[in-house]
Amino acid sequence: MEQLSTEQIDSFINDGFIKVEHAFPEAVAEECRSVLWKATGCNPLDPESWTQPVVRIPELGLEPFRKAANTPRLHAAFDQLAGSGNWLPRQTLGSFPIRFPSKQSAGDTGWHVDASFPGDDTGDYLRWRVNVHSKGRALLMLFLFSDVSEQDAPTRIRVGSHLDVAKVLAPEGENGLSFMELAQKLDGLPKREETLATGKAGTVYLCHPIIVHAAQDHLGANPKFMAQPPLLPKKSFDLSRSESELCPVEKAILRGLM
Image (tube, rainbow, N blue to C red; front, side, top):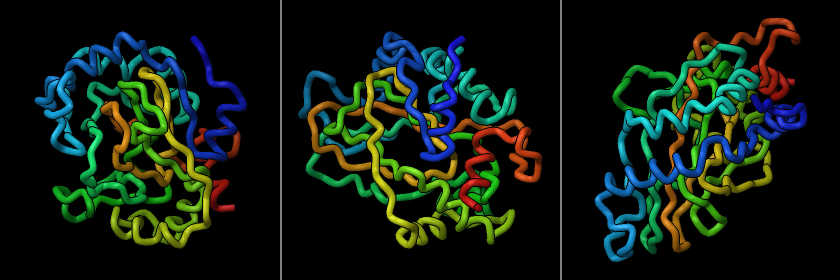
């Protein structure tokens, strides 16, 4: 079973993400893409049918998506990053934001950190919260089901921004901040290099759960098929343990607090 290298793990801690190529077979990506095309109601051979900048498909508990999420390579990486056995296998991959080439803005391209546990109003995602322990989320994952070039609206990632977010969240305690409260503080963080989540179908970006990222409007030619589910932890992260017991997710948070 292929393991992440020491260099990859160090990159995850310092930069907040790693790119795992061939994380699942391209044939599985093609199966998933076929299902998603049907779900969009659009014709892959007729761009005139691509009338919306983004079509969001709800969760699909189908075998191709389970296969994509549960390869030995990904399971090994989950163990290395989030702690051995401290994660729940994905049976679905959350919702699917399918982005189409369009001159119309999708209106959802702001920088943000994904929230991970409910606040007072569990039905309103903007009221969901995130804290310094990343309660409820072990990783943010970007699954690419189509080839994604720089022209195909790749997700934007602020390299190392998880370290800055840890500093913002630490004073807020267990309750943390809501999605919108944290989003409003991001402009005040240190300037960070931006990278783009490009890659071949079958690529997965494994990201620190409090990394700052954003979608972008699609100005290219090829529709982009992806999912961005969380990896859910079995137990909460514990930053009070000894260094030897910490997983890379926890080590990164503590590095941000130094």
